[in-house]
Image (cartoon, rainbow over all chains, first blue to last red; front, side, top):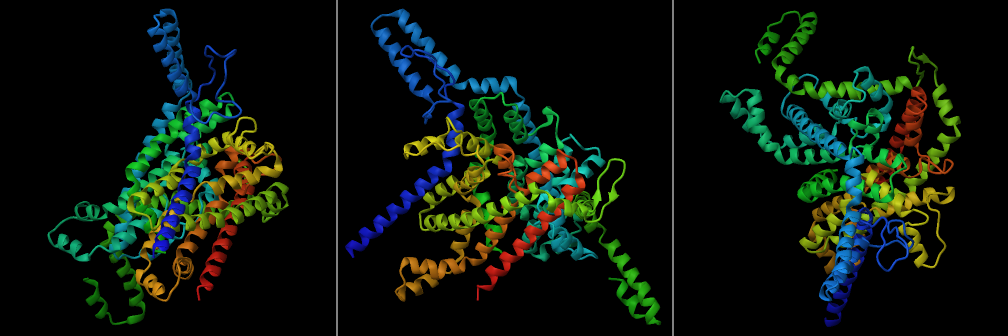
Length: 324
Length: 313
């Protein structure tokens, strides 16, 4: 019995060690983005002969050197102040400022010389607008397809559903031609409108709303409520969990969309974040520090979004998987 | 509702029946105006940006596109596609990439989910977040940082390789390691969605099965292999199909990290489609390539469905 307990404890420990190692591998690239974005690009302290570029150093610095250097300069300043050497203290004070400036230099350069804030704004409003539109439109059609009987219902449902597995790349060229035909090229509508054709939301909302009892709708009808009112006062409140899941997945899809934006947008001011990051890398002028700074700015909103809505992500993914 | 008695009082069944069927239909449509109105927005966008493009895609693939007017060329685009060395290489690369990375994706997801599932709630949600975060992060960002980590002189990878006492590798810069590097990257990015889907499916398994097996003297591994894995088969199938479709679309890593090179070593189908359409403006040829991609994905999905379903029995 006792050795069994020990075995179990060792087993559990092994599981934890394995998982922590895997989580470490998983998060390492993200850590490396942040670390590089805060690395000192060129720095010289009192003991060095010439400035060192810690971003491009071999072996690589595994953490932002500025942290260590700042503490070092701070200690030196304290020591100088204690011994009354004012000149030396001022020197170290200056060095402390330099460390801070150089650590965050990437962000200043990025915000001043590139359109990243514009891209951030574009990504944000396009993703939000599309999400709202999809959730509304798909809830409306999902409701009708779940709860109404009318000629053509089956054909419409199957026509939409059968496109669910077709990857966007298959229709890339004709959708592009359609966008040009409608004079939407190089506008944000070119990103928003085609997304509204996606089938997933209709499927999700219909499946979810099938479970809603008909009596609720009938009762409201008897009370003389209009269809529009029934939709807003009965269907929408009941559909909220599914709407949240759909909204969250749509937002992520739009936020991370890459191939389509680089095809239909060519004005620098109109780009979304992923497309903008590509131009940053293509320009070849940007250092790795600057590229990673851009990546940081692009990554943080999604990380915050994920941490806020984690349970909806889990719920949404589970809905898809278990039901199959 | 009012139409039913009218139907019954008709004398001459044949011609009138036809007419009244039309009438029934029209009345039904009229009665359900609201339903059509509710569907209208979706249908408009669906028609414009999904239905028409799908049909158009097939039509285009038999045409040579020209701004002044396209001409029919029969199957010439398909012949050209398969005769192009670059396209054949891209087919092979994408296939190889899929064959290696998809099983790795599913297997890693199953293993991690198995390890995470018995843990407490707090640990579970910590690990779920740790493994899912890279999945929600834009692939553009992931590709940028991996390109940096694969850097020959200053990259993290050659540092680790150096620690292991080996010579630095020019990961993305030479044709015999470039595709391999992209596959390593794909395998080391944790299968976040797969883990969460497996976890949800594991929690659905009937616990009495495990208790019965325990009484029969089955050990932990046997219980996993004889109960968990078979019970998860539908989920495994789902993940296989989903990640295969995803893997055939590999593009962002290519354009951000290698541009299909060196040579054509990392050329993939979607990257070739992208170049054919939007660099060379050969819309007909690009459509033919897209249609080929579509059928490859279909065949793979059906094949996986068949095999995984059939050995269920």
